[in-house]
Length: 452
Image 1 (cartoon, one colour):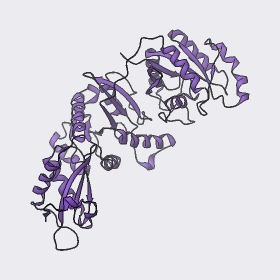
Image 2 (cartoon, rainbow, N blue to C red; image 1 turned 120 degrees about the horizontal axis):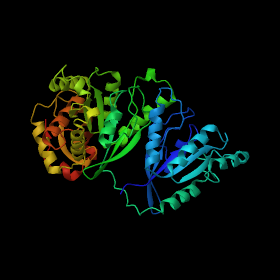
Image 3 (tube, rainbow, N blue to C red; image 1 turned 180 degrees about the horizontal axis):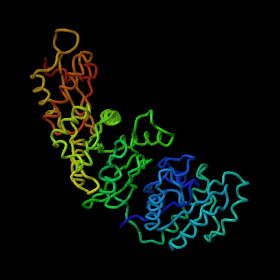
Image 4 (spheres, rainbow, N blue to C red; image 1 turned 90 degrees about the vertical axis):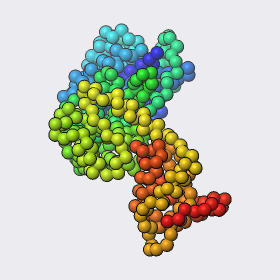
């Protein structure tokens, strides 16, 4: 059974995103004085008492969008209202009743959905004088709230609960088996990929660069399994960031990478890999995230090069991501989208794998008999004592050696490559931690060390 939807609706700049953040208890939607920041449906699953519901933030009804996306924004609002079991209609108590509020009210009355009228921004006693005129909207007395000061929060939760109690008892929502962050520079097809995964127009798709501004969590099901796909804003060079909205969008993208189980790093097959792509790839590497390099729009570029040649090109230009598998997709047609999800599931499985200490040290012993790079500081043996796995996601291995200061980056890469070849971590990052004798237990020191 799908979760009941509670949709937040209103004209621009009445505090809809602040209201969602208040009820969620954390910052989810970007809040900015600029009208029209929210374009897509931003949602979060919440619980109050015995009821679960999906709270959905929407764009401002009647917004004049600077990128001419008015119709797209309005369509997303309509989707939210059509799916809603309850609508939170937000007005601005400080501005008083405006014609656009009346237009929203007329539209909502035609929807025949239950509506709770919220007069937001009741931050001071004198604000109350403007509230009476909202009775004209036809939804009774407005409930006074202040998302900024969390005024009316408990009462609002109770009102939502009262409405949801009239519905059939909903099951506890299934935890997603995996979170997928879809990242990349502008216009590589991230939102198209999200919609292909979800099987519905869940986020706005446009040829206009920078359409997506916030990170949007989209829950979807495939073969009875629940996933969360995180759509992110397209990135560009820092020097070209135009305003605070883009600045926060960049930080939201980085946060999405950090909280994802697997990152889908989209590359535009029709364009060369650029500086933004390289920096984004480096960030993924630094966060030790399993990653699929998804070459999108392959239908427009496959005549230019074979997949093998293009894969070699990516390996040379995206330094540090050589372990990441490459997938070729045409998201607008849904081509290979399911294969990408299946591959992501395999990477997630690899990142959660543990190996026995015995197996790890067998591989390690074989590795040091090969042509290991020379250690720092001249002649003399570097003793490789022992290794153990201490964590997963990413697989984290601690390597004890006689003198950590003699371990070079080349030696670290050597061991990681040998471990990746022999252990079930072939396509995911491995975190290798080097430790000296001080961190090595006396009982283990009595073992015969492997020497270089």
